[in-house]
Length: 333
Image (cartoon, rainbow, N blue to C red):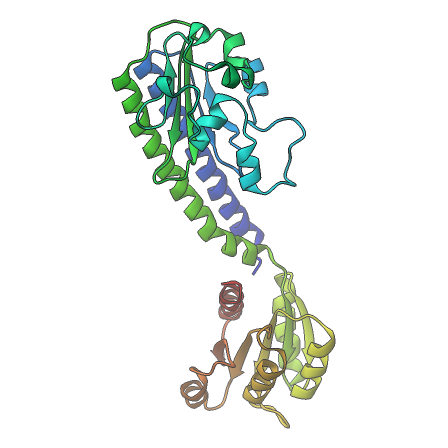
């Protein structure tokens, strides 16, 4: 359900602040990693649909950042499945991410990290692997270098990249510490994705302009409800009876049905049952409104699978909008 512009703006502001906080955490972590390893350059790649773009970096040249923004070859895009994109990742970074260490295993730790203190001159990389490298790190003159996968379980979610043109800055113990840091990064990435996933149905519901069918035999009541909904940018269609409502539903897509309980000819509960019978499992949720004998109706209908929500008269516009908000969220789960 769309919110007022002030509330919506406030929510967007919170989301932007959340993204800024995440970036700040990554930047501060890279500063600490650089200080702890004495390496002037540090970066983190984060998995995104099978690619591992360089999300945050410190100390790398503009040329390096531009060239290493993606690990995919030029021309490989979103048309491929993420697993296929993962298989196409280039250079040593791609191999470390996939756990394919054959050809340079002597330079790898038990945790699957690649590291070297004389990278430009090392003979520990087989010619076949070296021929497939991008050469970017070699062109930058990096000697001390570590590529550390970030994986809480078996799936790699990120890659730490530490580098410096000076030799001999890294040690086995230091790489083990980077692997522990990488594990923390992976947990952070996983947590942020879970939070984003939890927010996505809410964002979708908030941004969606619902098409709502208002069913009430009293013209003034139906008009009032329609005005409330239109003020919130919803599309409101009015039906004066259950039969008219069914005719509208047969030719028009409706997201939510808002119906009075006590109507001549066909009651609100009878209408809800007929909607469910005709259009299940794609039937729109029905909100039942009752004035007279509300408690009695509620006790009888609150457990009905035909009715998604119940509103007792009198109710506020806020209560109405909250009920619509709730049933739209439930429909998306």
